[in-house]
Image (cartoon, rainbow, N blue to C red; front, side, top):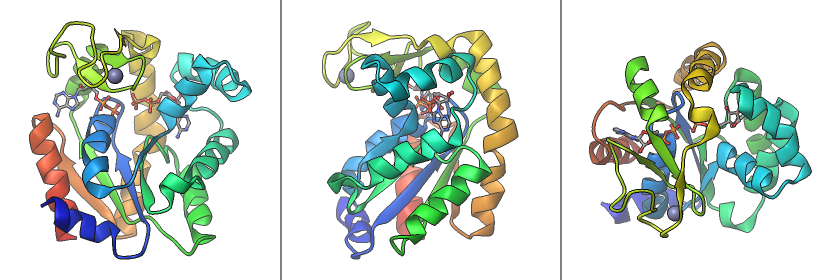
Length: 229
Ligand code: ADP
Ligand code: ADP
Ligand code: ZN
């Protein structure tokens, strides 16, 4: 199966996949699972902002107040960061965009950016999960300080409590995974990000996946969808 999927990325054309879905839908979890078989890296805007924040860069400090409130960081800053990331050598064959675009203006900016290189979005993978499940997933999420891998206290517990399975890093709870901020983030999602589902459906690149299934089954569904299209 791995070979067949690689064939998609070896067609000579870069592949740009978008992971679409609410906070907590499993975008990051799945992006990490498929990046190896696809041979293209996950580009997660939230991870990039948190990395900048941990290094106290200008970008990180700018993003901080927005992230704490659970609202979107301004588009110009976000788009510039993505443009910079996609121009790096490891993205030559494409990327799995996770957490970007998050509104229609960002989606238009991405199209414009890719058009400069004669490229377009290959597929938008929409992971659908019910609202109640999203809240349980987000409030129980634990993230690795070193490699950003996500675990869940009940649904995806690490082998040793508080320790990352991948790199032995320390797990922590994101401040914005608190109940109040989660509610705000979901509101922002349904208002600003959910319209992207129609946007990509209209372009004929949308694939809808039942994200309520266990992690490995969601992965199988995504891989099947990529192969079939
Ligand atoms: P997103 O990147 O969309 O915000 P994550 O991948 O970080 O979502 O997943 C959110 C939380 O839900 C994490 O704690 C993760 O371990 C857990 N999770 C991911 N996929 C599933 C799933 N299919 N079933 C149950 N829990 C999941
Ligand atoms: P989740 O995985 O739960 O969906 P992220 O890590 O993607 O959360 O995002 C965390 C925060 O980072 C968002 O609430 C927002 O403040 C900021 N952020 C991430 N991606 C974007 C984006 N594309 N545009 C604007 N803000 C973003
Ligand atoms: Zn780790």
